[in-house]
Image (cartoon, rainbow, N blue to C red; front, side):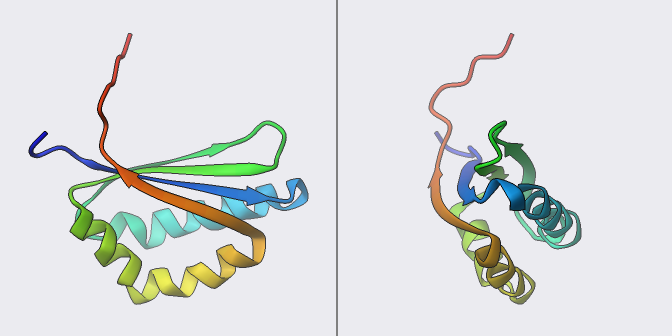
Length: 101
């Protein structure tokens, strides 16, 4: 699967009272930092209807681009702010099936 995007999925567990604040923080971060980084392709925020989680779905050109994002000083400044609002799990992989209607 050469030349295929790397998918990064972060699942953030949040108190429903803090979901809107978390979404606003993540949106601001994507607009001001993530979108300026090399290798970034797209990001989506998915908010659970029950308010208890937010998923960040993003595509990157390579695993190296993801690691560079994680090492960026501007991103590191956001991590504690995110951790104040949510606990998160992260996984990186590649799309192995995609069907679109």
